[in-house]
Length: 89
Image (tube, rainbow, N blue to C red; front, side, top):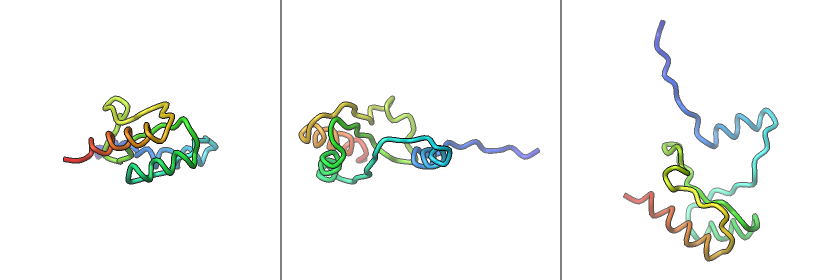
């Protein structure tokens, strides 16, 4: 019997799969800059959570790539800048 290669679904694909079964998720907006993160947080309302979204990175919270209970535009900008800085080589 051929060996099967087990893979992990990305967060986005996991949420898409689960939503087909009626699982609800909070509002998310994908952004690519600190300025866009501030605009998105203003749109969603505070507090917000900020995290890195990359298919190749799992266990984001264990790697310090999630910021919770972010309560202001200043905190969003600081957290976003810090997280985006972790992605640069």
